Length: 233
Image (cartoon, rainbow, N blue to C red; front, side, top):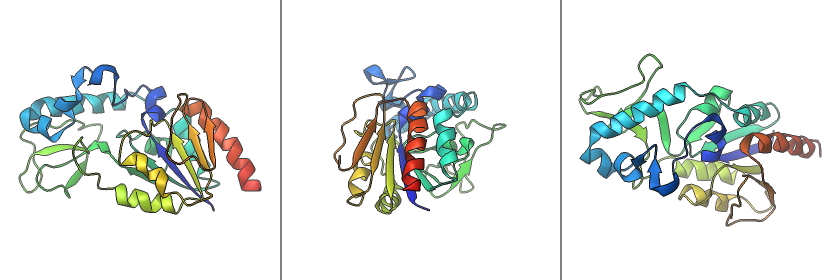
């Protein structure tokens, strides 16, 4: 099977009703990003940060994968698919995708504030955390999110995966947020690149680039037809 690597961003989940991280005016769900998505915000007001992500998780339970998520899961039947997502939702997994790397963390997980290797998955029955809830070593639990100003632990693994790609697909990302935007530079020469986005996205590597100016769902439908032809050739 050919290795198909897919990089997804906020536009992938927008049709499911997930708010984009960078909203207009520098706000996210009426909060300043600096207050809820930085280490400084966490130190200044941990209760606000916990409340913010508790609300995000509850909202996540109310949405479902869209046709784009489901279409990518279907492609696994013909290709070795690896998804690298900048999204913190679990809609790829809920749609059936089995190989997913989350560059910016996972909303349904929490981790120890002092021992980052201690990571826990929440359940629909217990989807919130509060001040005073701690890991087994006694440290406060925090969202398992890569905040602005923090290192991206999975970026080296993502670089390795992109280097192995036979086909690269980019969906719903502005390609302006680093280090994720730099991943396109790790594609081997000659590898086809498909960019799905209704907006005009400028990428640093436009060699063998095919642009599909559509939403994630419509664009993935087109992509599936193109891939079927490539697979037969």
